[in-house]
Length: 491
Ligand code: NDP
Image (tube, rainbow, N blue to C red; front, side, top):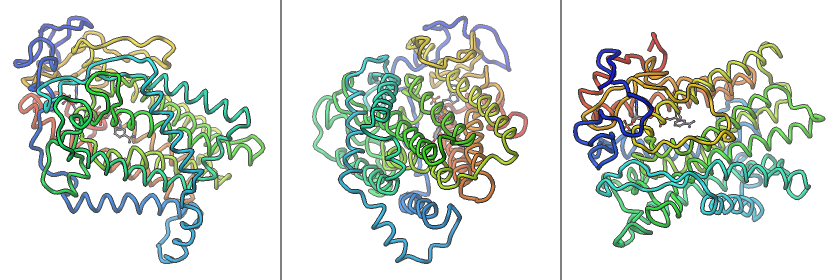
């Protein structure tokens, strides 16, 4: 078992694709050989408050996005009590109903991302064994980075040639909001309905939309999803995995383009000067989007891809919630030229540096765990240098880990020996920073920080419950070795 550290952790003999210390029921390579080593928590209880909770979240999410939009447009970004309903309805009818131009541009963007996902070369890797497919693995073509680069080149050439200004999106924010909301709802509905199509033998088309872990409540099942890996084109990598495509390409690339649009519009309104706040947001959103695509191969082993079904929750929030809610602060900055980091230029510079430090921890924490798993699975492939930034300490050499009866080992080294969700903490720091760049005049720029903190701590507790059920005593041992969740030494 290699060296012993931290009360019984195993230490990988080297960064080897086939360690000798796998789980008891999965053979030598934790998670490689069958359903028993994949996400094993099949009869999970209803979450998010069951049917009533799911219905509430769906209604609240729609109302929230329009509330934030109305606050920006009619209340200067302030909290307000929505009493003037007829005024809001008239405003939304005038500014938030999509025309052919918003629908056309968004459809072109979606078509482009689909086309790029289908044709560009990428790193082809197998996912985790899928329990409902008898332990079979699906292939993923991780070409998100190439799609990201091509998208940026296309946007830059359209903008600088005068063909299509990037500012257009900020000018059409309300109608784009509705376009994304309707797309999120429609795609969720279509994928849910596809789960009820007659089953086709094999794994192509309707077979890839098979229902699993259904509760019998249509509202709850629609919210959580019917199928785990809806995809066109079968299990091999030539087709389109809808969840992966939406999670990586649509949500984060849309988000960056909206931020870029707001910053470009601010620059043209302010004589080319956008100020430190916009620079921090541009850096933040570029880094986040870039991280998702440069490490796309890590995402295929994550909880969202391997366990969470493609329901309304993921679909709506990827297609509409993330791009709209997460860019609200940039739209606020566009409308408030005086908004700035409290403390002036020096404070902005400090925030910039602290942001990069938090990014370093977040990026390397994610990659340490994901590369650890890929190495043990024998599917790790180093990315070329130009897939930037490849950070030092992204892989822990000879990591200490716990082997488990469930087969998949738990890392207790690198950042992961300090706190079990230290990467969530860094994400919370990002959210706080996005608020700080807007100053302290209003509360709503901090809404995302509050929302995200609640969301991610709830996610941490859901993950804890799922892992406790999957790993049993091994999870207890792990939580004793790494007792802190978010803040080392505190919580
Ligand atoms: P994690 O990266 O923490 O993955 C959780 C899973 O990893 C667990 O279910 C378990 O799965 C496995 N795991 C847990 N502990 C260990 C360990 N010590 N060693 C090895 N494997 C372990 O969570 P997420 O997928 O939620 O988050 C990934 C990133 O995405 C985070 O940085 C998060 O902040 C970010 N994120 C951002 C969101 C946003 O909207 N901005 C939304 C959600 C996430 P298994 O069953 O395989 O053991």
